[in-house]
Image (cartoon, rainbow, N blue to C red; front, top):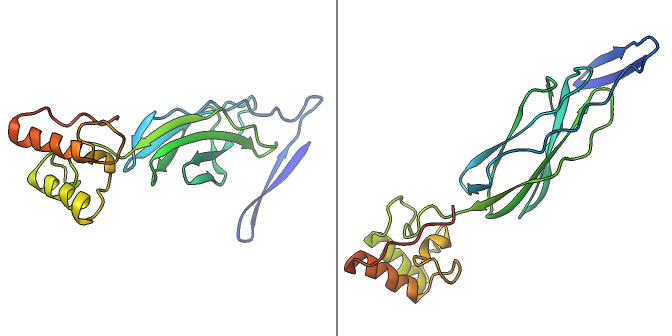
Length: 199
């Protein structure tokens, strides 16, 4: 026989009891699946990650998600219960550009937690359209050109995503004179369009 108590908050406790005759009363859950999700996401996105796990006894399972990103590591509280074998999702929003490693582990009410899965990595970027420097959804307008000149020469506001000001896609994310010339050539001389963002 095995028994556990689960605190549900306040003054509520839930008792779990399992009795077995001549066999082990519980088998631990299987290993959870490595999370699946996008490989690349925009900083404004909310990405959904999915995992599942089986349990021989078909006990309900609790999932704990762990994310290691540019701002450090954060671990969710235990979430659930979920039916064994069912897909479980976790939504994650991003505040910083960089690589995020997502992993998960499970437990049932009877046993200790599993090990964390291998990580699923997602690269978070900020650029949607190079040339949309003022972030209004329109590419290479006079407003974008004025925004870039003001930023580069007058100490104006920094673009929300510096990569959008890198019109020629060369030299990293910091805009320079070549980007300004490239943008003017595109807008007034039929030159090549700003290159695509990495996403």
